Image 1 (cartoon, one colour):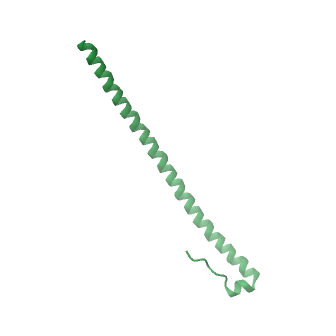
Image 2 (image 1 turned 90 degrees about the horizontal axis):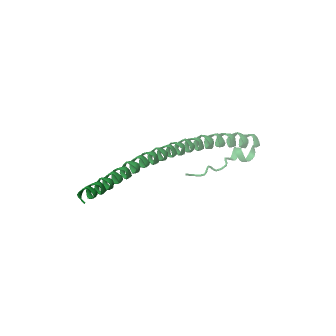
Image 3 (image 1 turned 180 degrees about the vertical axis):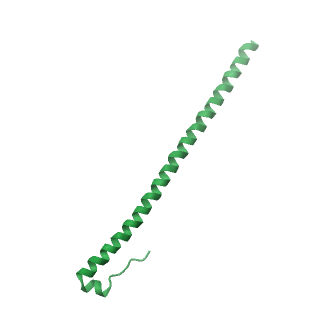
Length: 79
């Protein structure tokens, strides 16, 4: 990204400098707002992904526990 240089008019006129700075700050604010929105979207995606992962881990843990319990029951019955 190139850094805009000051124009001759801007160097000679304070009013022109102030107006150009206002335009630059407005543009910068728009870009930062866009970045903030994208970061919010990424944070929401991460949160949803974590919730899905937790559900999968709980399901897998339940399956393992059920398998171990059934194995214990079969061993106790066969004794």
